[in-house]
Amino acid sequence: MPKTKSNRAIAKRFKKTAKGGLKSANAFTSHRFHGKTKKQRRNLRGTSMVNDTLANKYTKMF
Image (cartoon, rainbow, N blue to C red; front, side):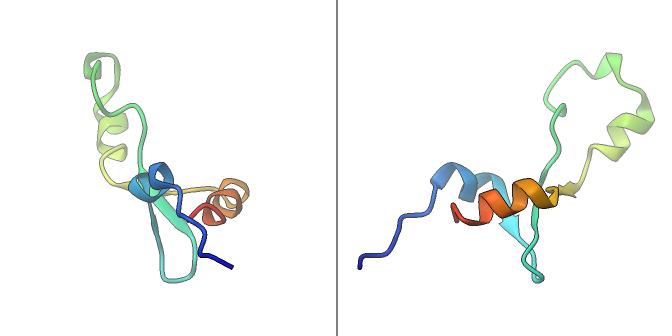
């Protein structure tokens, strides 16, 4: 049987962690920062883990 193609949209947006979880960048970081507090902006900087329900769904697409 041939190999299945990975979903390129998922592959570009998420990275797999060592334990098999998924991490991604945060939403709401592109514009309109004047409506957000400094604390919100600071907390949106890094990456965040995808919850287990969606992670199971997305790992099948990798």
